[in-house]
Length: 570
Image 1 (cartoon, helix red, strand yellow):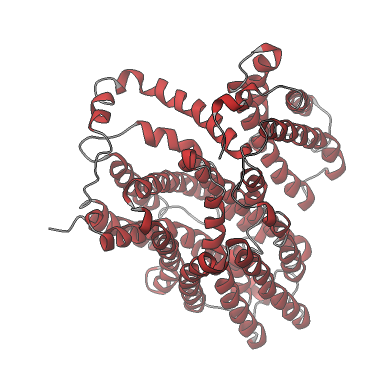
Image 2 (spheres, rainbow, N blue to C red):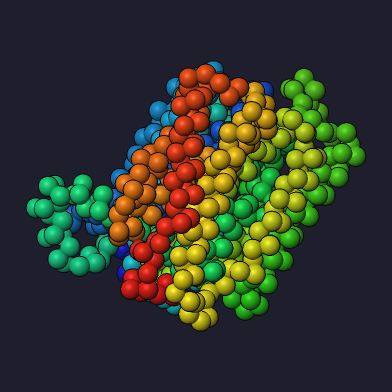
């Protein structure tokens, strides 16, 4: 009989390491293996960038799954253990359905099914993190987090390098079964033998006979409570408030960690085994660096080390841009023009390995910095939201970089990425825990400022539609950026409505404006004329105006739900 790993310190550390391996496998599979395969089929960098970006969509909204995972539980299989088992089985089954698809002809369907697969992965991540919070002792959490991220790196190596090493023997699509089997192996050896401690005996009784009748009401109630508590936590201190924008900015230069590196490997003549070798070594080096970076930040200072690590991430990108430009490899090349260039091969190896060292050092440190500004009373809610915002930043980067490669070429994309990756350093001095109580009006002023900023940005959508026009790269990048604005606007309006004690016209209209903002965020699924005219475009313009007016109006509201009677933020 296999041991219950949660019963001992070493077992817990090993269990969460293994669980995070299953989170890294799909990431390596998509960003490395699938991106490499699609580039060999001459799928454009823009399409590959959009594919990689879609992979992160469920992870960007995983905060919404939290209340569902918290409310619905199984007395027989364990609360979070039951969710992990169910999601891992569904992940494996969803991958098996991809084997029969014809790529690249059915790329849209393939992307949709992989989106479903990653939704299961995002729900699993919520359950794993919740289990860790309820299982790990306080003196285990630092090392455990380093090992968890290292496990994710190993998973990326399995899903990326492992799949590419198998491809010459099995063909590409049968390797989907290998990925599913790797996930189920962890299910059988780690999750099934677990014996999760029941948090409270009364919980089972409460969620037993009554759950069927009032489960949905509880979920909706907890969703509303989530929006209120999260909004208060984000605005309760200067560091937490700055953390929102900090997480929406890229975590340093990101191009060598996304599809650009896979695209370039194919164009430089790498075969699958060579791509797999590069991916394997770089991800293993990254995993070791994650543990080291977090350990150093505990001793040398979080923000100081994070600033150094983030700055260093830009150097490999600038080096590779310089070599590519000097060798004349600027624009993407079709299959007929690809050849093995020893100078570029060496440069890609050097840049990728150096980048993964610096990225690994930065990764765990950045996560720890966000823990530092998280309110302990709503730690699960707030920290999960920060991580979700970071995934939004990754999806945005994957989108614009794919477009930029086709429009500007590799060197310019790398240089722009190196510059944009440094923007977070401007906010880093603010990412610190609150050392003293702030005045009572600070959270209210932040709420009003946030509404004002989002309202102005929402209004800018109309003139920029006319300027950007068409279906070019600028239009696609602006669409991605404004999607973030519309999602943020919808969440702010919903949270504001929940905290508006006095009611009034603004509180009555805010939910409707939030629905309009949500529709705007999903506007890509409906045909919209490129020029600002016609019935559909007028409808979108009306929703933009409604959302902007309500957000600007919100900048004048008293925000009574942020009052001191609700308790200090920190």
